[in-house]
Image 1 (tube, one colour):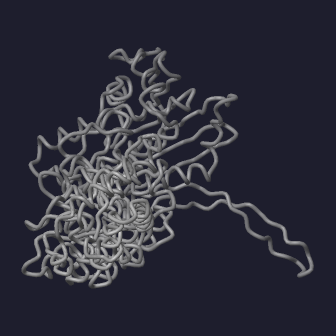
Image 2: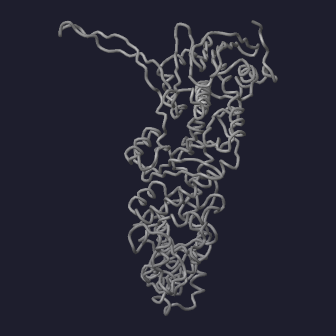
Image 3: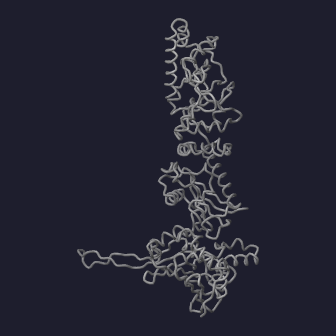
Length: 614
């Protein structure tokens, strides 16, 4: 039996695979099981037209057998098997995929073969991932329809050997002899049944054939007398480690909401129940199934750098990545779920994706689906939508602001703000529908909470006129409305703006030439204010502060909280209610007691600061 060399620069490629392509050693078991599933798929396909096979889908299985004494892990299947040519072409040439060739041959022979063949392997390199943990690999295989079985063995890049051997039935056994442990690596872990269980559950839970393993268990021995101490005996029992059929592959009508909730809780370690479950199946240019969940509560780490957005991505039931960020936009980063598709261009490690048009199409479809479902929930299930919005409304607002407002048109109808007149959360559409005929703007006011906004002098005129005000109580609110600029051809206007588009009838008659008074107050206060003006919005209060220019007071607070050294500051404008008795008194004191008049100006300014600080 002669030693044979790998082909196609395989030594360098094998070294690259072991040290660079795969980032986690545990991936090897996923790859070996996926290859076993492919081998069974091939034989299942042949069984459709070959009556001599005498096997049904329920007869196929994959078995895992750890042997701690021999330090071997064996994965076997009763699939199509391989002959000598297959071994040389598929295992002797790294990056030659027998699965891919089989699929292409069948597609060439049958126009309908695409519907029946769902082969995972594409590149022929997954098998060699086992060398990350193995010092030797032995393959014992017999091809369906052949009378001869073969043994392939290799210790790595030095080459491989092939010889005839004995094997009763078609199929393949892959025997992995594990490397010796080192200070940095514990290869024994891959012989522990709990570790094998967890890896199968994580990566191969939805392989369509049962993955069986003999599990060591213990049970109490039968007592001769009740007073005897309980003793235990060990025994082995074969268990199926995978669930095989993903919940998203089952017809929606056959799955209860309780089952969906349980899957959500277990899969994503969530304590809450989803406020919305979205099940979708798409066929066409790109084919995929998705099971999505909109949480009802904010995860504890949601607004931290540790939170990972993204959906779990499967290819034909095999986990590719736990969090594919490309599948959900940032403004929907709260969505959890899975996407399963066979239409992806995977790279050879199956750990990362080449960002092709299929992935982009799936992401676009998912974004539209989430938006439609949220819109539907807003219209038909307002109570649950408001529950969702209290948890993740801020994220939608960030989405409006992000990317220079690129997504504002898609998100604006999902926003809610507290209403001064309705005393509850309302949509922008509901606000506009209630606007008075002579109302020019959509009014809003910012503050720590509703009570603080109610007490603002700047809102007094609007409230006296019966105009509805949207309350902005989150730091992102004002940025959101500024990004929107207008809604249904109505511009947004802050209650602190100088021009509210209405006349103050209560003070209009008492207004007169006040330039001398305004100049006096400005000279008295100096650089404390940028300007002093006669107010058009005050009714019963003597003074208020408003901002001049593009930076509001709320923006100033926000920027100084995130960047204390930024020096960001709004230009303060002191507005005087020219009809208020305190202002009239100050004006008369200018002629009789100038020092007292200056004290009046300082007091009024301090009063305005008190309202501003609320």
